[in-house]
Length: 169
Image (cartoon, rainbow, N blue to C red; front, top):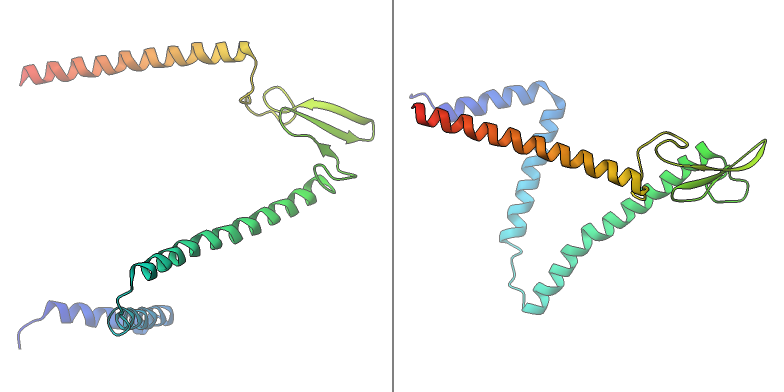
């Protein structure tokens, strides 16, 4: 009897599966799923008219959209719950300790209400927000120009070195 490598591989896989309950169940699930796919794509096959294909396309499109909608609504509600736990009774609700959106927030504490800046140099540290002043924009522009100039020099140097190597060969 000649040696069959495919059969040997199958026997090794079966031996591994028999040692692990999880692998056995995963293999059984995979086999059942493949049988179901085969049945759906062969025995239940029925040609649809154009309006039927359109409806099926709408149905298949709507599944991830509705699933994503419910997932995002659950995520938002969980996020709001944790925000209320961390910040008291809410950001903008009555009795909340922090109010406001954007660059400034109103903070209520024992001393009263005060307005603080959010972002770089303000409450919570952070980076400069998109609505930075002209001086910050000018500094960022100069730094970007310096960076790009340095990158152009490095690229030109690499190209010269590559050309030298090509000439030497």
